[in-house]
Image 1 (cartoon, protein in one colour):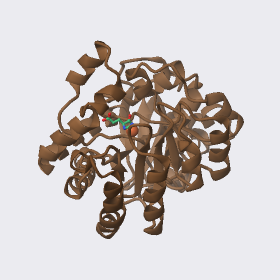
Image 2: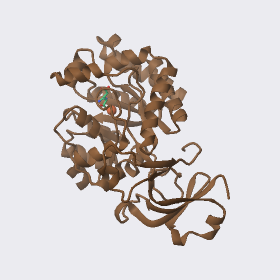
Image 3: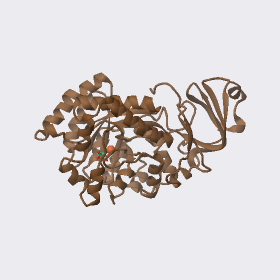
Image 4: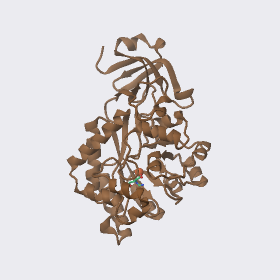
Length: 407
Ligand code: NIG
Ligand code: FE
């Protein structure tokens, strides 16, 4: 018996290993955990007695286990809501019109600048707890509602503190180019310059972010502005991600690929050429059906082309107050299948194996195999497709998170 060595038995294991049978499933399986890492998985009957004897045995009564879910794109540190905007949109105003009138992202910026760090931690931790209730073990959180150094840093610190408070691992992303802040309204280029020359070096010194991101879109930032930002970020060693081609084809996915970005996200309007560039660069497609649903978009991302080009497809909640006020990962799983035409297995891979890849963490987590972190979700289901089949049910029985920091 041991405090750090566990064996989970009497369970079915969806390893999510690629190239296996459906879900990489081991029916009547077992999994051994030593000091936070997976030591062994296989059929329960083959569990080495040595592993069983040295461990605390937990019987899971025929439940399924999967890798703990990973949400690779959220904006869940924010104050206030956008309910007035929600009402205005029902009366016909578009997302772009609201943003152009100083609402949208900038209204959340005002509320987030006014909030204390403690308030942001409490708000964010409550949202993380909701994601964890659906099996999340690792969540990416972007800044981007501060747009001045002080508030951006406050958000990134709050993101990490919220992760500790809610017992969810967090990766942070500096979303420096999200919207042009009001005080820079007449000097776009000056804003991009201060982000590149002042904020990015300070961010690197403070080690507050794991990667950087930008919103490349008409009404947000141009490909040239994003390229300046990515050049500066790359010189400082940051990995890149991009909000690309969400509302129009601005060549965002190809731009992301040119910088070897971890991911290009949204990509509803990405062309075949953009998909080919992503494939060549190994850039992951992060699909965000929650924003597509909330904005009542009709253009789906090019799923068939992504598949044909073998671009890894991840899913994410995009949890944010404007376009995706959605705190349930199982809802996102269902939307990935029902709205975007993913198979239930592709969708689950999108919130596990491919989500890990979208964060550059595929050697650490995202599948259940020896050597990876023991980040595991246990489910009250009879088949893994149930995870995307039900809407609004609580299916997660519990989570295990291997301890210690990610490398
Ligand atoms: O991913 N597209 C830009 N960023 C967010 C929306 C942020 C907001 O509206 O507050 C997104 O959809
Ligand atoms: Fe987003």
